[in-house]
Length: 300
Ligand SMILES: Nc1ncnc2c1ncn2[C@@H]1O[C@H](COP(=O)(O)OP(=O)(O)OP(=O)(O)O)[C@@H](O)[C@H]1O
Ligand SMILES: [Mg+2]
Image (cartoon, rainbow, N blue to C red; front, side, top):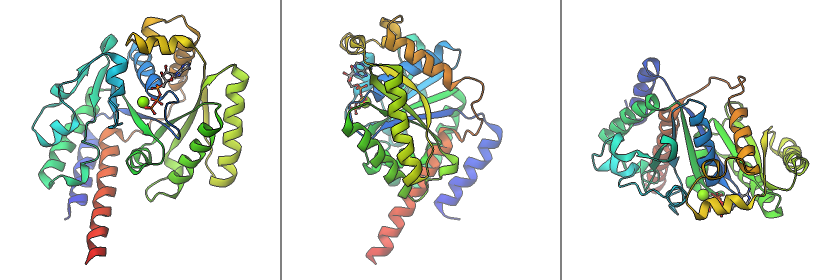
C-alpha cells in the first residue's frame, strides 16, 4: 500500500466516526479585493449564529489576518506538522472567540512530509474537524499554483470580485485555470460569487451576471450569487484600528451586507456534502505526491 492509499484509508476510517467541519474557501483572481476582510467578518458573524468557527490563513505571503485582527500567533501549521506542536498551541483566539490558525509554510510543505508526518497531520486534522463547525480559509489571490491547489480541493468556494475591469478578467482567469486542473470536479464544487466595493445592489448583481454568463458559456461553470458588499470607508477604518467591521461598526452598510451574506450561507438550503478539512488536505496531499512522483519518473 503506498502512502496515498494509506492516507485514503485513514481518512475513510475516521470520517465514518467523526464529525466534519464545513470548509469555506475565500479566493479571488486579483489581489486586494477584500478576501481577508470578508473571511474575518464572516467568521465573526457565523460564530454569532452559534457555530464554532476557525479561520485558516492559507495565504503564506503576508500575514494580513494577523494585522487585521491585531493578534500574533506564536506557532503555525508547519509547527504542528514538523515540530510537534499541538492543535491547541497553533490555534489563537481572536475577537468574539473565533479561532485562528496561521498556515505558515505548512501548506507549501505538504509534499515534503514523511509517511509518519502525514499520518500525524491527518489525525490532527480529524481532531480539528471535530473542534469546529466551520473552517473559513483565506487564500492568496490569483492563479499561483499554491492557491489553485487549495481551491481545487475545496468543495465550497467564495469568489470575490470588484467592479474594476482587471478584477473581473482575473476572476475569469482563475476559474479558467481551475477548470483545467486535474482533480477539479465541477459537480462537487459550489462556487459562490461576492461582488465587493459596489455602489448599489444593482451594480453588484450586474457584476455577477456579466461574470456568470461568460463562465457558463466558456467553462460550463454556474456560479451562484451570494451577495454584494458596498464600498464603505468604514472597512478601511476598521482595518486601521485592527478590528473587524462587524465588531467596530456593526451598523455600517458593509457590516450589514456581510451579515446578510453570512445568513445566506445558513439559509437552510445549505447542503451537507462536507468532506471536512481532513478531506481537503488529503486531496491536496494526494495531488502533491502524485506530482512529485511524476516528476521523479520524468527525471529517470
Ligand atoms: N467594501 C469595501 N469598501 C471599502 N474598502 C474596502 C472594501 N473591501 C475591502 N476594502 C479595502 O481594501 C483593502 C484590501 O482588503 P483585503 O486585505 O481584505 O483584500 P484581500 O483580497 O485580502 O487582499 P490580498 O489579496 O492582498 O490578500 C483593505 O484596505 C480594505 O480596507
Ligand atoms: Mg488577504
